[in-house]
Length: 71
Length: 450
Image (cartoon, rainbow over all chains, first blue to last red):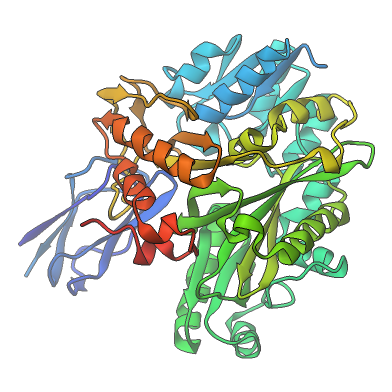
């Protein structure tokens, strides 16, 4: 299990994965936008998307969990 | 001259325009979003009008809200600053239709410049060298692949209606181009509502040199010498200087003279008036037109400090129908200046770092000027670009400016958020920077943390 957290404060621009999807380490899960910049949030390890804890256009803080990965 | 103007912008540039206007006896109206209600630019203007919620598209980018504020306050003119609506020809036209003066170029000139592929055709016809690239916007990826073969890899894929580095990417071969083409079209559509992209040759170690333009409504147009803005990250400027180190001690004098001539020719081809900037890439003795920015540039202070030209003041006078009384031969460089853009971001990875400024100690000293949008206690929100201040240092020559900049940056304290001040210190202490051997990839190779 891995909680993938926002590394910056901003808003969720795009969610690139769906629950149940298999992802590899380094795959883009969510794209955040902050200060006119897009920042991809990548999978910290390979696995299956168990839970998505954010919605597009939602404001998030650094450290907030966005996606939960499992096996 | 106007009695009252509205400033359709925020942060440091709103404060700066407001200060110049009030010095000229012009009253000022600030507009602000909910996110900015507590910032100094709102307090310092003579009047302030709330125009909407935090998101720029619902406030600073909303022409109706700006014009309604102008009407409500009786402002006779609107200064758009830079970014937001500053290069939006439809907004300039909407101002004219509402009987409000747009402080900037004529809407017709803006329309000719807005589409970058059209702009290239116009300046090329005027004899200005352009970067080798696709003749216009590309219909599909197949056409892009054919054009890229002709131009030669690596190629830069750019959104036709883009700016500020948004919707730009490099492809070093056909496989990369297919991927990058899709990204650029998607991003262009999301950001600008148009999906056109074009290609151009990508330069491995170019310098970014730009020429200030100032013209009035009677056909008198001059250039205000050059600035070098080669130090960039993600295609955005970080440090700008005047004069350009490229032209230090009379080097490349012939290139410099041709570049000034090309800048004036480009501006005239667009039918330009007011303040603007013609940007060039320089590599190996050749220079090429990139684009003309139809607005006041972020880095305009380094030109003001080294030429004595009052660019913001002239913008107001020219918009009010006055003639530009400065002649070309009166524009002479005195000394040197460097501007450091202070960004709310991690100084190594350049990640954005919004938050509350818990402590701030501002630099002082001879030749040190700080144009800041925030004070101690201000909150930097994630809604707008990361530039929170500009540190502008001037002196008799580049060495003196660098020494003063080192002292100023060393004494500049901002706590609560991360800033790129440590990066600027690494830059001014870098021997390659000190030698003036700059190119736009400087930060990929130099000024790295120890």
